[in-house]
Image 1 (tube, rainbow, N blue to C red):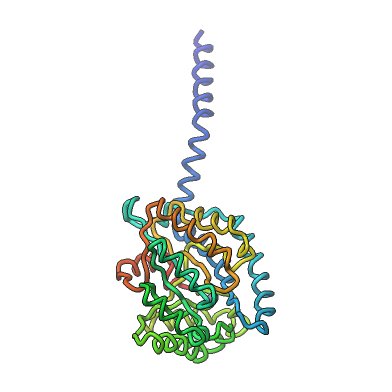
Image 2 (cartoon, helix red, strand yellow):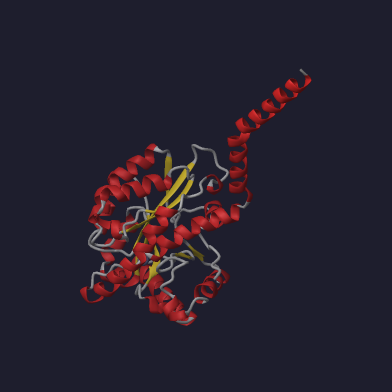
Length: 322
Ligand SMILES: [Zn+2]
């Protein structure tokens, strides 16, 4: 009888242990997920990097188009595969604000172009302001569009003057390009710009390897920070500089899924002439984002607190280590 009791107790222990197994596994897993937030941020950055390097300039000059498209595609395949593999870590990216307090900055790169007025029309109709990281050469080509953009309450900031990756050869060649990009806007708008810009290809671009080597961006990013600049990347990409640029549904999905569970978003778009499908999807994206409770913000009236949040989330001044 005693023995039978022992067996019974043992069986109970084994059974309860087995029942507890999934939750034990769950705890270890969530512990592992929480234990190293840096790693999780790194993961996100890797994904970021993928889309970053796809941020190629889409030129309207047919001579330049071919070379850039080829590069685009090469970077794109990487972008896609990384996006598929990585489940974006979410919780840790949230800032301390409450659930209902959601902020989004829509950013449009590589314009102005013949598409920009259409983007402006959609933004105006939906009462949304955005930020345009422009190409200096195109600012000189379309000054009236730049004036209209600013007049309608959006912000216009430098991206690059030429969008050639040879700007990443020496620090001098970089600053020469940035100054040209900056002064092109300042001349057209007759304003003094804040120290905010976006790197051609983003801060973690690999296109610079060919010119300045692998240690070039780590050095340049430190240097621009020391000069008081904020360089801005993004944490959601519409994919409109990728092979998805013609796929409305995919771009919608990229934006809706990308913003899910994020309280603070800088979203990447490109107002290049070819991106008519993005323009077609834009209103639906905005309606959905409004439905998610986002407030639309721009770099025109950005607060120090918002800039600090961007740095904290590594959307701005992300340290580049290689
Ligand atoms: Zn660009």
